[in-house]
Amino acid sequence: MRDDDNANCGQRAGGAPGAAGGNEHSIQVGQTQQGQLTRNDVLLTSDSTYAQPWTIQGRAGQTITIDLESDAFDSYLFLRGPGISGGRDFQDDDSGGNCHARLTATFPQSGEYEIVVNTADHYATGAFSLSVTTGSKPKSVARCTRSH
Image (cartoon, rainbow, N blue to C red; front, top):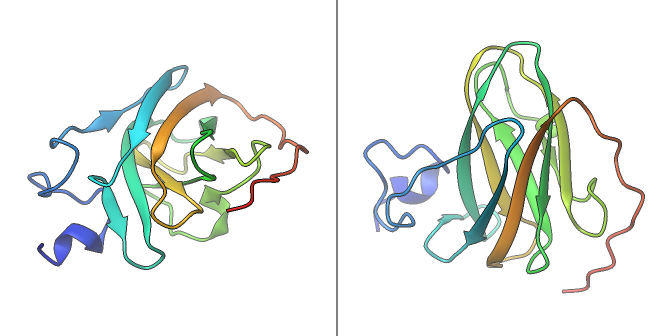
């Protein structure tokens, strides 16, 4: 396995070997997509979790809410792209309630962004639902009671 396979989730110029068939995932505002996090996805060596990037076109000043739900794993997501320098503002674990992730974000610039489907559980895989809606949604108060 090449070192750059694990270096940066989604930075797959030419398609990284071992990526899910080389398929690129994308989603648009207003869509819900079903997906599967598998052992063929990028393994983030920093925390031993699998990650799957989804591209989305963002418009400067546009506010969206991203929901990631799974009964198979404790959902975690983050957003990367132009004008995002990392930090906690663009990632979420349990704001969707019941161990689901919900992230409300405003695109700082227009361009292509990456929603990264991830998990709080080491080496977890399984089915998930990813949706992106316009505007903001409140955080859920339903606690995560999952015990792994």
